[in-house]
Image (cartoon, rainbow, N blue to C red; front, side):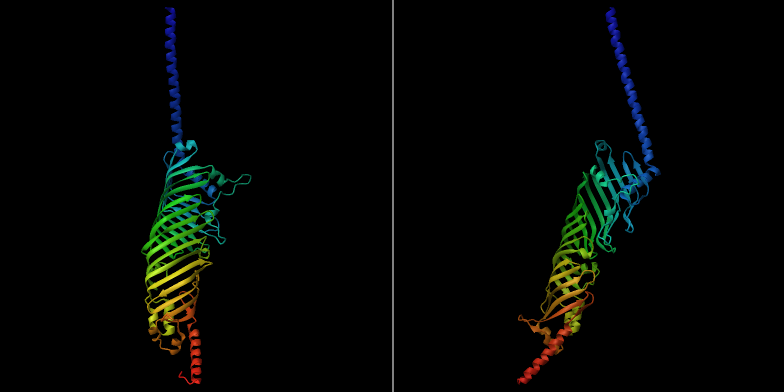
Length: 464
């Protein structure tokens, strides 16, 4: 009996001790959870303070090397960050801010952070305005961002090293009503996007960024001369290159398609564009020119550049259907010089041109305007900035129209070219808005030659 009693007592005692150990462990875990909760609450309270905001802005300044300011800042340890306004200044040598935004919202997931990965569930930027500007040496403001200079005795932070170690996942990036302007060293805009809406996701791993999404742009302009409206396209980011395409949009009430590529590392843009049934008068008005030509345009263009008009290269072709010229400066000049009012407002059945861009000039190896009674053709070039003209042209008129020219000397300047049209060659200089021709000099030479011919005929007994 005594042995059984001792055994039973031992078993009961062991059970009591086990229960006490479990209770103690539970109490310790509860205390730890409460401590963590208290610390988390304290930390959350410390995050949402002016001191933390200043520390965060100071860290941003250290990383970018420029001043960063923000409005109201709300930080939640579990939910994310909300900033009502934010402004990032430009590096030294550039005017105005680099980036402003009406609001900035960040939602992240803490659990992946324990595995060494920063996962952002949502990043929403509302009303951002991004200004990319070039200096006189061809460098851009964003290329000069970098860690602020370290204090003596301290080694500067390496952004490439920190970026290389970063594993960042952005599940959703949304931009609402964004604007981007890219300007040259004179402040002239050569690429601008307005009303940009973006929804995408991307990842940064080993210093390489990749992502895809969808973009909508209310208006894209090139050199403030070509405007694409209501643009929609997939967007893809690979390292420091952005591709927008295949794109669909509207140009001067016509259809537009193509692609836009941006290389942000050494900055280069490339635009491929196909336009169909664009209204030529609208196209000219949007470019700030008088609507001296009407009709429907179909054309293609392939353009590249690293800055303003001086860097622009490319080629293309254009054809205008239902073409009609109205008060074009060159035609008005021809009408006055030849004293032929019909040239001021002629109808053309076909207007077409081929062009190349380079060295700050637009070269037109093929230019032709064909009508039943008036034909104008030639080749030459125009300065993209100055508008300076250097063309060699040929004006061909139907015989009946030549017969309406009042001056005999002018009629004599037109030569029969064997297709029932009579023509005269001439040069065009001046500018697009104020052209000049050498027609009078050519007519004078033709008139003098006609006088000589008349005298020769008289010598041989023929009537002049």
